[in-house]
Length: 311
Ligand code: SF4
Image (tube, rainbow, N blue to C red; front, side, top):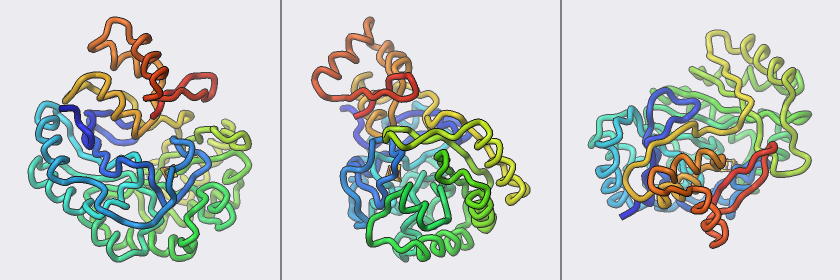
């Protein structure tokens, strides 16, 4: 049976070593509707937590895939926001107990003021927090938060959580030209991030699915790197000019089409990445891709002169 919740092993751009991904929120629901969202925005904006995953099935799939994968880590990187799954702590503890690997998550940190979310995330070993700005108007413009979120409470929640978290914190910041690229914005961001003591900060460009959203220029990247380096002495500031987070993957635990669909449900892939995966089972991967498109199982979008595929 093809996996629904577990995918990989995957090489994530920002995470050293091979990683097994857990898609514990397989629906596209999130407290934000970022202008650069890899899905073109969530289908539902919400801060409501629910048991989105079935822990028994997640563990069954992980037992099938992980032992054959030689993965170093397990990460919650989902179609929706992983912390909206009220099973996340239970899952993290069970996965660590069974496989003995560090467990982390890529999260939108907008709910770190909530006691239930804090308690759950304290069980993880590492976190990548997505923080684009510490200016309220910019936050509303870029992240388009759920109306129930209060900006000051979100920032305070992130600060307080970072003090009590015993694991490693990393940060990802998406830069949008002329929106969060000014010196004032970047100094304010750097000063805030310093209080989190992150081991690394990753700066990326946006997916530009909305016309007004523009990629930063090379000098924007250079400025951001130099300001963040000056504010966060000792942290690793890593700049990438591509928004991809998945670099490569192996095919384990199901047929190539199902694996492709499970990867596309968490992140867009380029044509050549899709074809590499499909070629493990099909002689003519471009025909398989065309047929998935024709059947409406995947969609294609143009980004930066290339075609990206996603669900
Ligand atoms: S936090 Fe992530 S999933 Fe949520 S809207 Fe933003 S980019 Fe999309």
